Image (cartoon, rainbow, N blue to C red; front, side, top):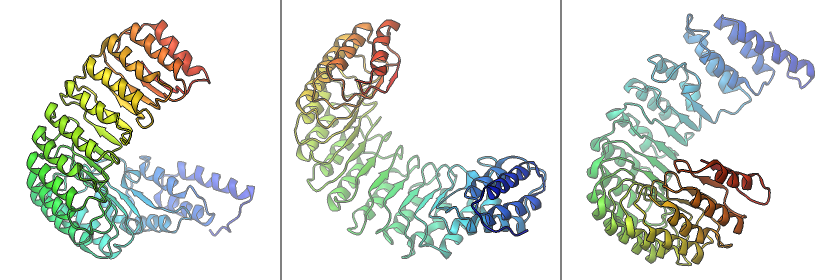
Length: 465
């Protein structure tokens, strides 16, 4: 059946009728023929219809044959809907299903033409990785994003070497978190990336046992002047102070590109942070986002961070120190915030042992340099009513531009809630999100805040309590 493309009402009714038939027909052959009809009619939801059909469970009893899979691939490639992103989970019935690799191999022609390939948590095996590498080798210049996260790849990630080393490879984002990669695999990967450094912008190797030796291999690539990497995620990779030294050296050698570094949940402790700060304080370092949550940082490490930010205050926009025992050293960070050159916009100090002195210092910072900080998290600190009042002295300043304030589980009561309400009335123009869960607040006090949310004079949009 051949149908001419048309924009008429009749055409639309035909499309809807065909979709209805697809939903009730159990025969794969007939369904695919109907998909061809939708393609001829130029239906822009064709890709979504195919995905729904394949994941609906109606074809459990009859698997698609090779020729039928070829027909599906042809439909996807010839559809008027541009398939920039390929997500395997949209074409299979469940993640980590043994059948997923068969589907992957059948749809390799589609993968070759996709700019973004998303295979996270899909049970990709050695065989699947080899097939993927073979497909990408035949068309290396098209792919821009590859996500293989949460697959047990281990050493099979090395099968991608030929692709990554190919000078025609234009890969910009590579996600390999929780893939079972160890230091040896990291060494091979680093070597591959050094062969073709000018395109990769984002690399996620979190939750792999890289250790310091693996990070050192990566840093050899980061030092290369051709390296344009902007985002590096290394959560929970077994990095210590030794790995931090290598990262600091890389930041000093090639400081102009890396914008985001996430090192949370590594045992860096103060010594590691001190070493990292030798790179951060370099005036050429352009790092904008630094995550160091749960890294064992205490007063000494916090002092080193404050010193680095004083030396180079112009670039850092986000700092996450959640879960470190900072205590009174928060005062040192508050001093940095008061620097008119400081551009910090987001500061997370969740569960950091912030004291009353810290709250007073933060309030002072909000008044002294209020134009940049947009998000502040103090959740999990035992602030109480008095400390919340101290903080509100900064919030009520008309120049304070804070938009998000997180105060989960801070041990304050109605008295602190009243202070927040008063501060918002004094400065109604900016705060949009307020997180207050886990505090002993009465309904009447919370209602005063929710009334502000409903008042168009205030910008408050969301309250969690």
